[in-house]
Image (cartoon, rainbow over all chains, first blue to last red; front, side, top):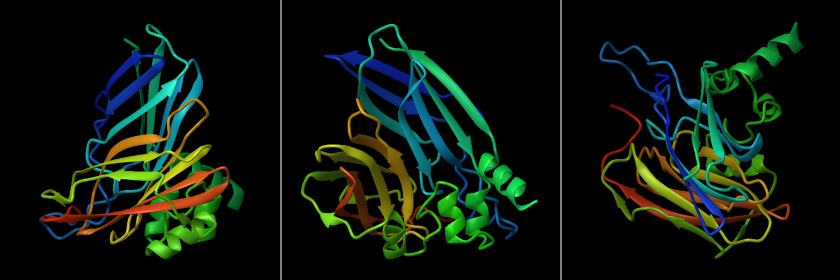
Length: 103
Length: 150
């Protein structure tokens, strides 16, 4: 479940584009297993991206974001070589942070 | 202790699960920073955001007209409204329409790409809070295979 995120951050013309692919089952809590028992909800509820300790994006999610969530956004004020970190937290209290250098 | 329990629930994010189970009220969900996420209708979700949004052609939704897999529907929301501080993404006909709420700090573009789960063909609704006011746009996406179940 807590596999590494794949993050790419590229800067061009002062704008840094960040693309994140997270590894998470994003179980909605609405499905039932083959035995008929409900599969408990297990999905990312909060996402936060930071640059130099400053939040550049935050998100609150419900269960309808797809399995292995993809997220892309753009922000200004960063330069190549600086780092962007992305953290997610799920409804069970699980969390993961990964970071990448801007290229 | 009620306050300790609430603190723990908020910290662990278990609030959303309890709302889905009907154990937590909408008011408590709002207090936990998830307004509208417990709503079962589009109108209730919008009401939880605090107003009736005005339709805007400055919000663009890029999504497929036809999605063959409802479990993974790519969506891009772009707001050209000045001072956009939040973008909300809702799927009208999902059991819980509110899907994502993004906060856009200064310096970040009001453009988000993600992938959503759609239970059936539905309108995708994007709401932007710009300069304190709510604006919305709608795009219909038809789904061949619903993305909620097995």
